[in-house]
Structure formats: C-alpha cells, structure tokens
Length: 167
Image (cartoon, rainbow, N blue to C red; front, side, top):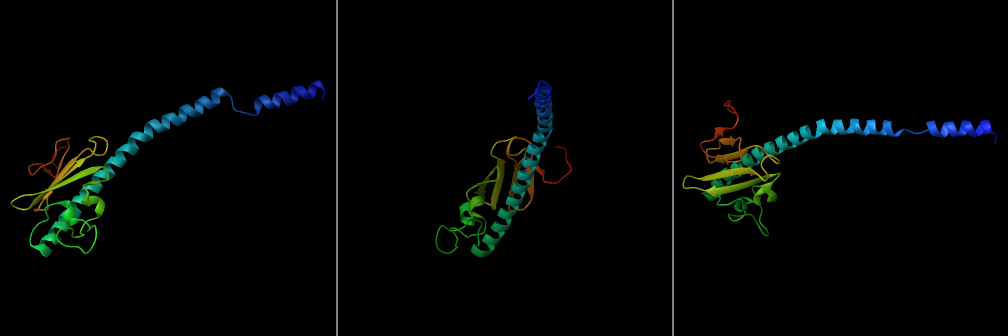
C-alpha cells in the first residue's frame, strides 16, 4: 500500500464514527427529555390509581347493596364480600368483589371497611401518600363518595367528590 493510500484509509477511519462530543450531546438531549417526561408519567400514574380507587369504592358500595338484599344485613368485612376459598358463595364469602380487593389492597390503595350501627364505612388511603396517590377517599351506606387532599383519611365531613370546593 502506498503512502497516499494509507493516509486516505486513515482519514476514512477517523471520520467513520461519532466523536465523544457528539455522543455527549445526544446523551444530554435524552436526559433532558427524561427530566420532562418522568414527572408527567408519575402524575398520570397517580391519577390513574386514584380513579381506580374511586371505582373500587363504587364496586364495594354496589356489593354491599347486593349483600344486604341477599342476607338482610351489611357485610362486616371485605372478606365477606370476596370470593370463597372453597365451596359455594354464602354470607361468609359472597363472591361479590374480586379477591384482590377483598384482601384490602389494590392498585396502590389500602381499603378498610368497618360496620357502624347505621351501616358501614369505607376508607381508601394511598399505600404511600404522594407516591401512589394524593387523595384519600371515604364512602358509606349513603353511597356518597368523599375526598380529602391530604394524608389525613377522608371522613363523613370531607368534601364530596366532584364538588367545586377548592382543593
């Protein structure tokens, strides 16, 4: 190979790839895009989990109404609304809600149902406030859903869900 051919091959090898500066610029652009996208993704995920919690409360309310019409009383626990471990559905496991909801935790929220002299209450609280949800929820036999925009559990005096009061 002549000297001229070697210098041409050497020049081609040097210009064939990306320089370190070009690679660093591409990485910086990707990091900027991620810095913008990740908070929006986290917020969208949290909002989806809150909507799922509201729907789960509606499911529990509906199941309680069905349980009351079948057995003449409200269920004492989520397990009584859930599927039976074996055998047929009955008062101890009526198969009115999914098994994961009957266990009390679903999609980033903890669900607690308690009986009261007038009926029952349901609380839905984020597993990790600010990460899995920004709101807590409450409902009872009146079927009205209430919300609280703080870590404190929502209760019967909290703002009604969907009302126009300030957050």
